[in-house]
Image (cartoon, rainbow, N blue to C red; front, side, top):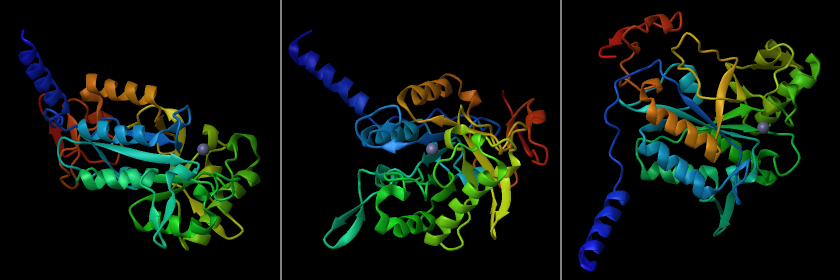
Length: 321
Ligand SMILES: [Zn+2]
């Protein structure tokens, strides 16, 4: 092969590699498939066990997009309102511990702008560039932690940030007041940690009720009901789901084994993400795939109607499985 031909081949190969990946060969709907709830900690440099770099976070979004994943709000997953185009798969993003790189403002010309290198900035830029991807995420914040984990570490902007999240399609979740491992404390402390965290969030966003709790270090209190609902000094909390720190892909909310008091997550570190993305590449039949959102219709593969959660009506059995 001549040098000229070789370089033409190289050019062609480079073009093919750079070309946007075609949409997934259309996957048949399977609304009993599993859903990844990704769990991020710090977005910062350098990459380590609890830190994803801005570049890698951007690449995660790109990999999800190319494989047909679309962001849904945790609320919508819990409410079984997954309104996605046919053939796409929901994915939920969560961010724990309100570290600075998740949501940072920069001063620019006398105004505050969202840092394009923080998680919120990256997510919003990616969503604008990829219409249909969505931009939902849940932030499990720590209102009473020591810096730098107290509400993203810009104290004067804490109210602005929480109000922004609440008003722009994000969710604020309870992660206790200062990251208490609830497995170690008596009932009064457990309930106090949860109620006070909510109260402190409400100082910034009056009336806001976090719908979910993420357990610091995955520690369940001795009785799960202490974390589910209660009232402390006039503050009432009620959680529709309790999220763990690990456990893999979550069940479909339509599945019989859906258990919102024990919702598993996938830690968004390279090895875990790679593992799960390739798992679903090899086993697309395990993935939740939307049927296109006909209201009141749950599309399940042939023979799996018994796996549907009691109370969820099956209106459509998908042929060919
Ligand atoms: Zn945490």
